View 1 (cartoon, rainbow, N blue to C red):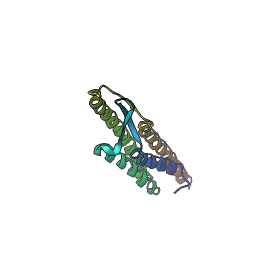
View 2 (cartoon, rainbow, N blue to C red):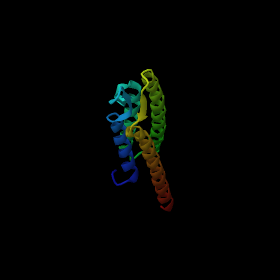
View 3 (cartoon, rainbow, N blue to C red):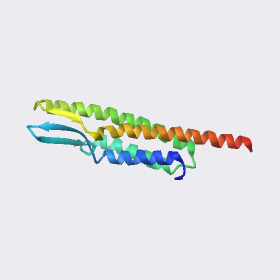
View 4 (tube, rainbow, N blue to C red):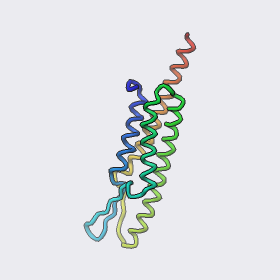
Length: 143
């Protein structure tokens, strides 16, 4: 299980998904020096999508004997990551409009890059699952 490359990528995707819920995604400067940070747990939809993506990666790790299903979960993880990015951008716009009434500035934090990293990890896992599947099929032909 751990000896395969896709396991490492799927574990990294799962860790990234869980990490998204703990780090600030963006911040706003309110009245001078006060900084308000937005975390994914403040929005139920963002939190749910992050947990779903993390659980997809974690479940896919243990499906090493069923590579086609593991591949489908990895591709689904890519789409969930894209959905999280879209929701994050939408929520940032909403947050920015709320803060704009106070005439303050908003900016993305480093946590906003984690969904992109998670998407890349799912893509790398899918590529390695495909390579593994091709290798197994080529070995079956030799028998």
